[in-house]
Image 1: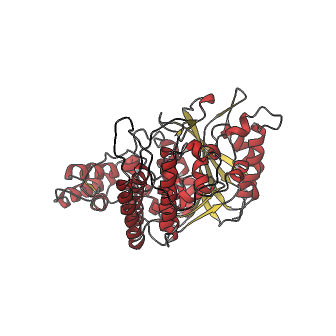
Image 2: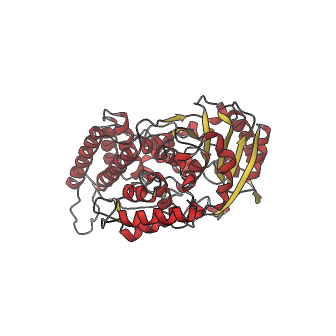
Image 3: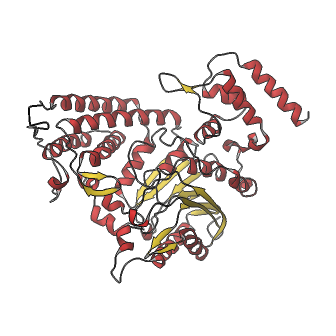
Length: 488
């Protein structure tokens, strides 16, 4: 039967099958003859208009919307063979690399905080639609996807939802904790424990509500916690006294949780509020300002954050199959850490001179008892290292040398023929514009990698706020290297 007639027959079948007024995502995917994951990718990428949601937050489609999806699935530019579940390993290189330039990599207006992606602020992270598309195009179900600069775990979450195993590495202990929380999911036992903690925090917070008296809008709280707080000489510089007491109390509750998963989720909720209740202006501005946080507000903020995180982790657990695993290693890449073999790497490496995570995460790391001075020494691309006026200041050559070592190590961990994808923009060093994609390509050639594609994308204006001294970058590259020297 000719292809055109087949399409008409299938469309007629879809029209006959649609009798319900409201159809679920699974219903529509089945009627359109595609995998549910493919439909979700189209929705997240903005290729299909988002339908309405019911009171529980689940999508529901009208018959007209379902027909639109079916027509899109039948269009010649979105062949069903493009479904990620049909990718065959030996066919990837020749069939799917060529499709990448046709995708709309700007993802303007796409939702970026679904599932666990929005549970903790993390400056300069890339949007999930980018790793989602790369993973679908360049790997198959059951493969292992790595992010060697995993940050807040964006790639790891996308890999797991797309039925891949995931491996993440980061020298930042806070990043590793957030990534574990985002990629773990939440079972019923953990959910009950976290919701009980939520109620405990909310109740205590309400009990500390200040009584407003004339001339004393924010009176100091009389509550004193008996629990540990950091031995940090600038603690009272960055936090009000009553905020310190409430944080100490909350931290003790989080650490007392029995489950590792519940503890990571609770500590991530705790970490997520620290900057907002401190006197640090914001995650991207390390300046001090008074915020007038009232007594009890820290506890209530924690309760709200933990409730949201618990819900997100529960939804994530419903989406991800337990057979797909995620491993996260806190390690310095320059030490060549031992990790499982990888089929694909998707990451957003640090831009030299753009950001100093050790500085902006300092108060969080201090409260969590993490070794912030060690991370400061290990951080790659730190603004402080590259902006120094000393003779030992880092340079573009420093970045290139570090990446040469990293890619030499990666060539033995990524399968031969596998792709390493880097989402990276330019930097400004000593007033000169540096093309970081060129530096990575050159470093890769020394390690047996070959550049096979480079795609430019326009960044959303609200993304990737960097050091204001070098301005905001507006474009970045998606650089794809093929490993031609690694193990088979």
